[in-house]
Amino acid sequence: MPEIVRFKAFCLERYKHENNMTGKDTIRLFNQFGVLDYLGSFYDVLHTFGDKYIVEDIEQFIKERQTA
Image 1 (cartoon, rainbow, N blue to C red):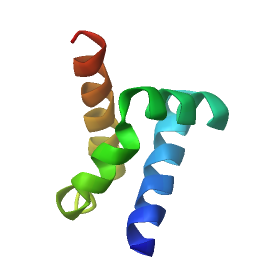
Image 2 (image 1 turned 30 degrees about the vertical axis):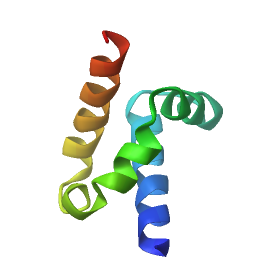
Image 3 (image 1 turned 120 degrees about the vertical axis):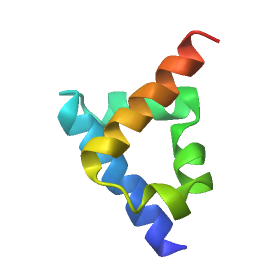
Image 4 (image 1 turned 30 degrees about the horizontal axis):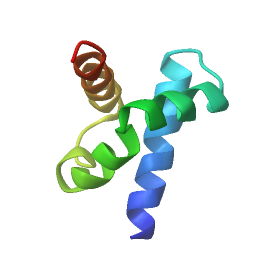
């Protein structure tokens, strides 16, 4: 379980950095769209990918939920 928490923190930090966001704004966005739950649910697959892929995947995940 601690590895999943570290993975979520890593993803949050990478997304924050790539999008020039504050930590507060990033966590608000992640909570709004359920990103942390998504990352936990698909940890087994996602943690094998690089950070660029993960950030793009998160962006796609959020985009799909914004249009739904």
